[in-house]
Length: 327
Image (cartoon, rainbow, N blue to C red):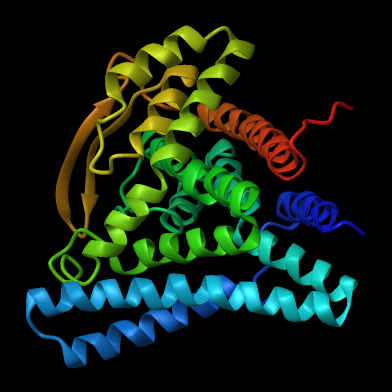
């Protein structure tokens, strides 16, 4: 079979597996392996480097080792697998692509918040939302739980699903795993705290750079999907006004577009480690989120997921064949 058709097959199969299975716990997973490597390298770096400058240099080295090493490992393993047998190569390619997609897992996490919240079980909903956000969830009411879940859903819609699809479409499994490695580094060592300010500096900047295009593409897709609800104009208005209302240069883009579609206000006051933090509001004129908005948010996310998949599939085909097929 043509190598491009094998990739297209793997791309489609990986998306379907993520859609159906999410991230089954207990399965061997490249991202978990990356996490262990990052933890080991961080500990080693802190034993060697003690000054802020030394930790920043160590942070660069960690990114190069983890992201660059992951890309090289994927390239070599695929070559070996395909040289052994086409079926072995295809299975490995499917699994690598499947492992970098987080859409199914994200949707499942949000559904585990929405279900008990809809039944009035705020305690279970708080426990579920605490698994996906870093803010203190113990005192959140229905609006706070819903807002936290919506912010997580649409912030991560870009780096958890759309960005890996884009990198896979343009650069194949090597590019997708490289992106996922940087994103994992960002989530583990790039927190904006004194402990990680130096060692995580380069990882944070690298992740911001890699997500510049995916975050904006995700936002535009959400605005376009707002047409189905007659709210594309509201979504575009909120996006233009509030796209930078976040610490991250990227996170507010999909959040603002989604807030406009749903008509809700995001951002505001949250508690982190007992400390009160006030973030800029997104769609300040919107209403406080409620449980029904979480259901609508999941519907919007499913549409976003399918649309992003179809578009990146067409791009992947066009890049490799120079033409777009029409079904």
